[in-house]
Amino acid sequence: MSRFRRGAATAALTLLLLATLGIAPAHATNFGSTPCTGTPRTCVNLADNSLHTWYPQGTLGNDIPGMATAVQTAMNDYEKNTDIVTQKVQNATTDVTVTDYSYPPYPQFLGWVDCYPSSKTSGSDPNRRCDRQVLRFNAASPSKYWNTAAKRRSLSCHEIGHTLGLRHPSESQGGATSCLKTPFNPDKFSQVTSAHDNAHINAHY
Image (cartoon, rainbow, N blue to C red; front, side):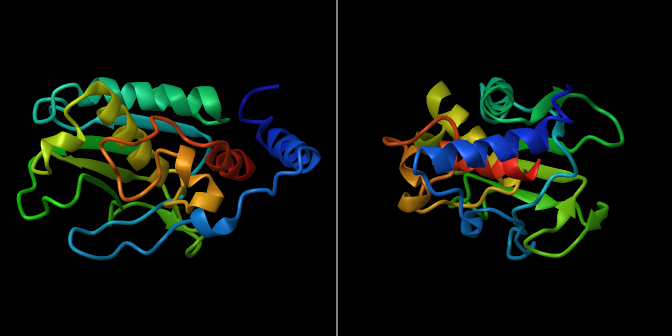
C-alpha cells in the first residue's frame, strides 16, 4: 500500500491507539487554515495532498547561513514522523517556496507563511486549501533566535507546520513538546512536532 493510500487507515489506527491509551485525540482548535491578513500578510494553510514539495527561492542560506540545511532536516523530520511525503523539486506545481531575506520593517517576525494571492485555493477557513505557498525567514530578526543549527531546525519545523495546517498549540495540546509552541524561546524549544501535531496531520492527510 502506498503512503498516499494508507493515510486514512493510519489516521484511524492513530485514533484507535490514542483511545486505547486513554489519550484524547487532537483538538481542532490548533489545526486548520486561517485568513491571510496583516502586515506582513500571514496565514496558516492546508496543503493539497500528502506529497509536500518545496524548493528554495533565490539563494536560501545566504542571509541566514545554514537555513537551507535546516529546512531539509525539518522536512525529513515531517516525513519520518507523519504520513507526509516531502520532495525538493522546482516546477510549476511546487507547494512551498522558501526564502531567507532581510525584512527590516518586521524584526519581530522570525518567519511567516503566506498563500500566494495567485494560488489556486478551495474551501473556506478552517478548511481552506492553498496549492502554492511561500515561507519566509527573516534575517532582520534577532540572530539569537537562529544562530545555531538546533534553533534553525526548530524554526524551520515551526514554519513548515503552518504550511500543513498546524497552528500554535496550548500546553494541553502538546505545546510543551512541539516546535509550534509560541512564543518561540531560543533557550527552551523543541526541534520536532509533538504526537498531538502528528495526529492532526495524519488524520487530515
